[in-house]
Amino acid sequence: MTDPVARSDNADHLGFRHRHLLGIQGLNPLEISSLLDLAETYVDLSRQVDKKRPVLKGRTLINLFFESSTRTQASFELAGKRLGADTMNMAVKSSSITKGETLIDTAVTLNAMRPDIIVVRHSASGAVDLLAQKVDCAVVNAGDGSNEHPTQALLDALTIRRHYGRIEGLTIAICGDVLHSRVARSNIHLLNAMGARVRLIAPPTLLPAHADRLGVEVFHDMRTGLAGCDIVMMLRLQNERMTGSFMPSTREYFHLYGLDREKLSHAKEGALVMHPGPMNRGVEIDSAVADDPTISLIQEQVEMGVAVRMAVLDLLSRHLDNGGPHG
Ligand code: NCD
Image 1 (cartoon, rainbow, N blue to C red):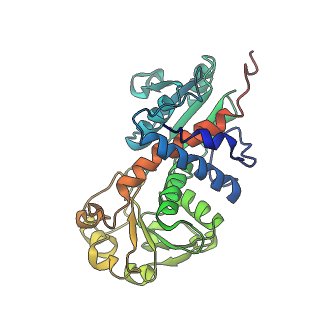
Image 2 (tube, protein in one colour):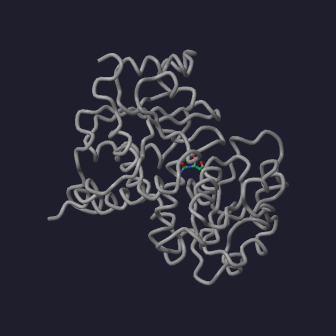
Image 3 (cartoon, rainbow, N blue to C red):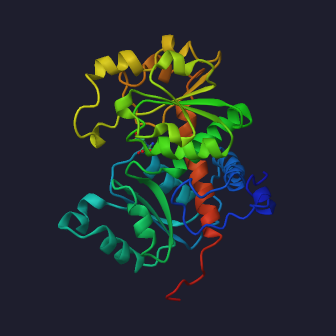
């Protein structure tokens, strides 16, 4: 049996020299491509009976999620375990955080236990960056407020590349609640860096100010915006981040912006559909579209999520000190 990952050790992971992965901003196209190449080998490994390769043997990985998560947390846990790390999920709800301990005190406390990598999700934009400045280990941003969610953009890129063989030159629409979406922000950076044409389709109330300065085309009408698109990336309506009223009703929202077969028919023939999950069925996406395996990449995105996170942990571990400042 061949080891799909053995090949990658010889590959030249050209200069991925980052200590942390805090965002897509700051990564260059070469770094993104080499990370995706390594992730490909982890897709192969994860499809084998023996899915383990102990490149993180002896290492400790902590998942610190202050916001709820299914896909991201589970896939970081699996990624760590497949790579042989001791992987611990902090149960934030039963921790001292509920007693008022600050983010930084929590981080410093965990840091004293000498983890090698901490994966953090937090509701405040910039919180993960701040935490990274206070610890000795590598930090991965698993989503900070509406700022960045780099591993989501990387897994989306891997999914796209496997279907089209490239990202450059594709027209990709990101639709819905762009304003509150870290997924949108990370994807805009990544897709622009890799040479795709990015469109945002959303009501004006769900777009960030100066969206037109992000290097994208902006549309307010789904049918017009979808014309000529290769990929339609839908976003969840993030009610938990909304203060005030952003739309008349979810019924109205589905009517105008929900992706159904009719609206999708305005995109390029054979256009594929993505969604980072969790989905609000019947709000931003119709089940008939989401569950059609001939057009929906949603389950494949989840599979790619494990492989991309394995690649991220592997690359970061190559730059870990042996011993760190205490040692
Ligand atoms: C996204 C997130 O948490 O930002 N989900 C995910 O990581 N798969 C998107 C969302 O919550 O809508």
